[in-house]
Image 1 (tube, rainbow, N blue to C red):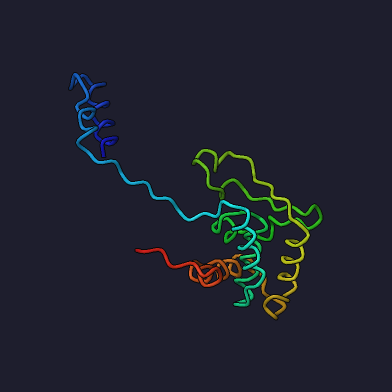
Image 2: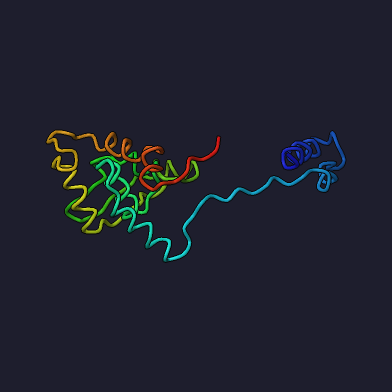
Length: 168
């Protein structure tokens, strides 16, 4: 809140309507906004346990495949959900994400370089088995976005990783 007041008064000072910024006096009067830290695995043993849990997960095959892709490609869920077949190159074993889907500043989304992710052999096998319909047991499921969106929906991921739901 102090920052918003400070911006307003900086503008007012620039228009010569005010001589000083009184928002600076609010520093001790306003309580700082508490910092919220999100859950993260930061130790190698925790990562090892997470990967072991991903492999052992016996739930929905779509969720299982999406969670494995997430761990292997190290992409954000939104980036993975927006994945398109045209971004996958099996010959060079790469995944090319346009800058528009990356978490970037607005001008970087429009003008930035694409993000090229190398695909490990496990990723290639997983995506090829999906393309062949082996994961779902059907042969003509061509919409990878719908597949990943269902597999990476928050409730599905929380069930898969046994993560408690975030309080509202």
